[in-house]
Length: 282
Ligand code: PAF
Image (tube, rainbow, N blue to C red; front, side, top):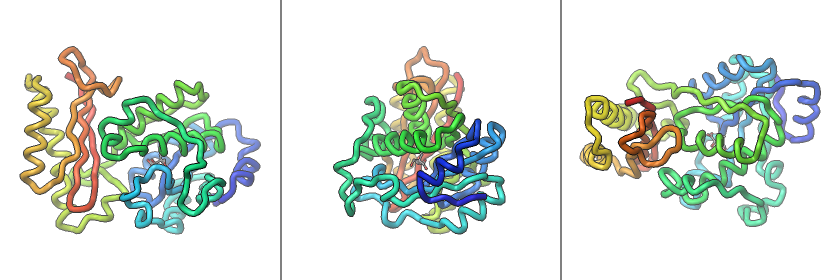
């Protein structure tokens, strides 16, 4: 496995590859990421994984400074998983106009309005930062296939729009969320949880699953179901950002005529913001 830090070196290393499968990450890798690599390996001989904590997608009061950076451990896991190349650029390599915290000179992508709903409502600019770095990484790696986790359902939706609307010749593959035995979705941010909070954290998934069960048994007052779920989580000590039942095809609020649905939630346990979702049919 090669570990490469610069765009030029990566381009030379990829020169002879006819097909590349790409897994973008921010590092601090867990079994969910390794699953993305496993899927990537089925699509190309050359698998590139990027590790880059993208400052553009963090809000001013978010965890950019404390986001866990574990490059050595990540590289060991990626080598064991059969990764061909790790691309781990510095901020200056990705954003040459970055001048010590001011990214104002950086050209960015404005995603469609759905990026201002759900996670985007409480994280203004987040999906512009994601779309911008993913576009840059796509241009650098030029993969045939790119693999993303479905835990970040809204992110995956926006990246699918990016690829479609900018006519990128890339197949985007979404991979099912890998969960702890408790049903807690694997996430780098789970590392912020105390062991007591970790035990409690599966309540988010359980609450989403309750909604799925209720819809499957005929409930169709979606705003009421969302409100009930929020109340349950608040009573359990969560600070709820949103619980929302949406069309899984368009991410618009679910209508009675929609049959392909996704229920998404974001909530904080103390200072840790967790997200999860469940796709389902009705
Ligand atoms: O999902 C992530 O880890 C990040 O948002 C991504 C896609 C690597 C872009 O920084």
